[in-house]
Length: 235
View 1 (tube, rainbow, N blue to C red):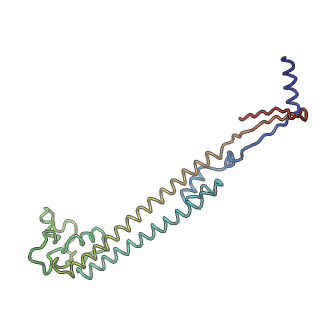
View 2: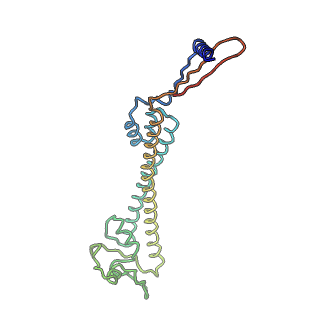
């Protein structure tokens, strides 16, 4: 019985066809540099994928990055214009003598005056004057800003002066919104690069191995009755 099996195996081997197939995807980037791929994605998301021959994610990464750059630059420019507009408005309607400092402009919107409101109503808000608010809180009136910085929006019982300060506050609110958009856009730009870098590493790991799978297929040709033996080996 053992002799018969040996003869059969010898016959199968003699008349068989050996076919070796190799999956090119598992080693197509074996000659590439992973640091080059990661660096390319850090500079411009999608370039690491392009370097590794993965085309399908290049455009999404590039277009996303372009949109975020437009949002970041646009929001920064718009925010700067709102600050300039608010500063000029305070100079024109409140006699503001300070510079275009955001912290100072926020204070200008929080108090109607620096050293007494002109034409103040008979029962003013206790926090309408900046100097009085500093004294009540135990601070020096020039502790944060010099005495040369002055402003006066006028009495709170005057609809016109109230409209002026509200318009000023509106411009400063628009500035703050634009700065939030700018910060979110910058954060998204960084995140887009991190995702692209991680994706480049993933692609490199999946396509840079030197190992391959081979299939040895035995197809003996005995008679025309269809008798055959097939063996698959993967390693």
